[in-house]
Amino acid sequence: MPETLMTIRDLDVAYGKKPILRGASYDILKGECLTLLGANGSGKSTSLNAICGFVRPASGSIKLDDQELVGLAPHQIFSHGVAQVSQGRDLFPDLSVEDNLRLGAMQRGSKSAASSLDSVYKRFPRLEERRKQPTRTLSGGEQQMVAVGRALMSQPRLLLLDEPSGGLSPEFCEEIAVLMDGLKAEGVTMLMVEQNLKLAFRAADRFIVLRDGAVVDGGDVKAMEHDHDAIIKNIYL
Image 1 (cartoon, helix red, strand yellow):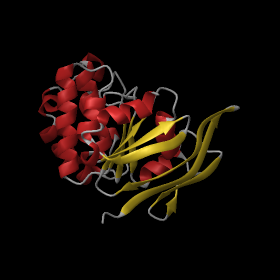
Image 2 (spheres, one colour; image 1 turned 135 degrees about the vertical axis):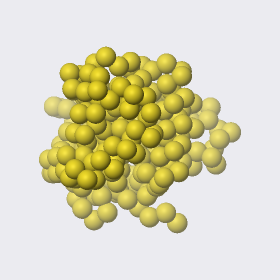
Image 3 (tube, helix red, strand yellow; image 1 turned 120 degrees about the vertical axis):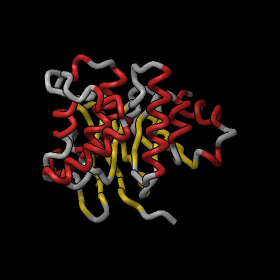
Image 4 (cartoon, one colour; image 1 turned 90 degrees about the vertical axis):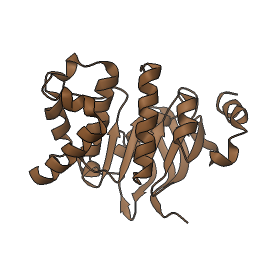
C-alpha cells in the first residue's frame, strides 16, 4: 500500500464570518495525483491556499509526514517541500524566463539549481529557446510552463496545481496532460484543482468531491471510469 504523505483533518477555514471549509478531512498518498472536484465556491482553491499557508485555518490539522504545517508561514511551508502553481501563476513579467525559473531554487544552492534548470529545459524545450525573453512576451500556455517549471525547480515533495488548464487552448491542455503523465511516472505527488473534467479524470489516480466545504464523495478514478456521469452529478446537484 502507498504511504501517506499528507494528512488533513477537520479543517475549518473562513473568510471573515463566511465559512469556506467545514471539517474537511482527507489524505494524500505518496506518488499519487489527487484531484479536488466541486462546484465554484466549494472550497477547492481554499484547500490549496490553506496547505500553503496563504490562508490560516480556524481549526484543524495539516501534517506533512509528522510535521504540522498549520501556523507556519508560507516560506516555511515551502521550505518543507510544498510548492504551488496558482491560477494567477504569480510570475515576474519583466524578468526573463530563466530568472523566473531560478527563483524556484533559491533555497537549494547554485549547483542544485543548475541541475534542476537542465531538467526543466529538457521537459520544456520551448522555454530554453525563450530563456532570455521577458516572461510577459510569452503566450499564456508558455507562461504556465514557466510557472510549473519554477515550482519543479524546488524539487517539491508535494506539488499543488490550481486550475493548470485554466484559460489555455486545447493544444496546451493536451501538453499539460502529457506533462502530468510524465510527473506521475517520476513519482511526483500532486494535489490538483481542475474544472476541465476530461483532464481531471485523465490525470488523477483518485478524486475527492467537495460540497459547501465538506468532503462528500471520493474514490479511485480507474475503478469508476464508467461512472463519471454519476461523479459529475454529485459535483453539481
